[in-house]
Length: 328
Image (cartoon, rainbow, N blue to C red; front, side, top):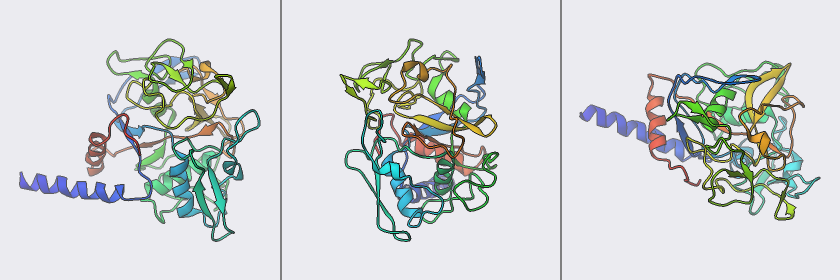
């Protein structure tokens, strides 16, 4: 008994050390391993054979700015886009949330007032992998080119960029399409899937934030004005079946899937595309390829414990400590 208590206390000390890092995440546990996939015209999605955790919210400007301040004082990998510094909205707006100051070698990054808890945008597929590598490697001076993914060449577009895939033993990762899909649509009680990511088969209503059910930030016009991103968790009555937020609307989210050639997948719709893009049946090809960035594209991360290891215990402890509507 005392040995078990010592072991749990040791694991909690590791968790505490991890939580002291610059970026903290709210995690939502996704259980029910071995679920069946959901047949759609483009394939069968959502089957995952292991328990995992997924970010309760999209990665935010505040979280990404911490990454930039840790790893981009000089930015040869192009982790920052100057479009991030423009918060303008509307048809030609950039909807950015992070400014850069200083000169090469001493760049610093700041969140634009009021936009810290909005989703980061203007990130390429490779930016998302480098962020997850950094998280996987403990943050601080953690490497961006190895860890969850191996990126070769030392340039913004890796030489293996068309084929790069998750490494065995990776712990913090960009979501696979199936991991993302299950968290958004799977109903563990009925062992079936909802059509929309707010636990509904009815089409989501695009509307300003409220506590109403099955609503999302998905209309280019709200109350007669151009829409903007909303802060994480603003649609308090519209969580997914597991308790994630904004898997419908706000920004499209990169996932690992290779769809055609080197084109990677995105899901979830955005603030300006309309409700049909939020549906489980809508699979999006981000046609600019993995180096593509856009004002309506961001990402979400997952944590994959290795079964039978202490990390599984740590993941469970994190899950117990997080509530569906916890804020960073």
